[in-house]
Amino acid sequence: MAIKVNNTEIISDGQQLANVTGCSGLYGSFHGQATVTSSNINFTTPLMTCTMSAAQSFTESGGGVGRTCTLLLDTSSNKYAPTFSSNINWEGGSEPTWSGYQHWQITFTYVASNDIRASAVGYTASAPTESIGLHGTSGSPDSTTSGFGSASDLICGMRFTSGGDVQKYTTGVAQGSNTGLWTFSTSLWNNIVPSQTYYIRATSHSGISLSSTYSSSINTWNALSSSHYFRYFIAGPSNNFGSTTGVMKIEIASDSIGSNILATGYYEWDMNGTA
Image (cartoon, rainbow, N blue to C red; front, side, top):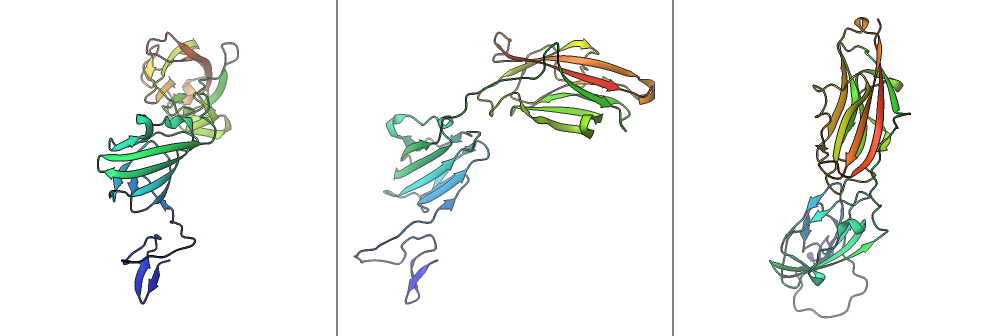
């Protein structure tokens, strides 16, 4: 709440002095109000908070020689990376490794428009160790049953997202009454947001072959910088088709030629018609 003397504001809603000149004296408890920001370091708001929901670039405003401000930054459990402009000069000449901590206290001092000096202190435990994993083995693959449902054709299979999720897809009806695209439980191929580009390869292991029409390139290393489907296709109607099974082999590697395979999984789809 602003404070006025003789109807003149002397302390603003943001807890800043205003319209005060030629004064001296003492004050007791006087605290700045935290301002929520999403992408701007504003030197007219001395204390800011930001909780990141994605990687974010920050700009600066309200600068003036000698002004300081503090940003309490929460990069979330995903450890999203902030990007700061070249005007920011970090203590010791080295920008912090943002993935090391979730919570950061960052202090900025404005010296010039191209010389904003900053220091950062990280809190909480280090980021979790990245872990790549898939489901099922050749002898005991992850299994899903899918029927035609109301679809004239049956398309079903897996989707691996660039964010680390494993999903399933069917145009019919699968176990648990799932249809369309759904997250495979809470399973991930990567336990955190991927820190680098990984590569995925799908091959037809047994049974019906994967559809090249409804899949990313098969038996090829595809970059997981984007999401990839690997699916089966059965032409309808359902009464022209009985039952068949397909098992796909999925591999994830750290390089584009598969010289370092990090995980291998097997996914079985049992496809049922009404013939």
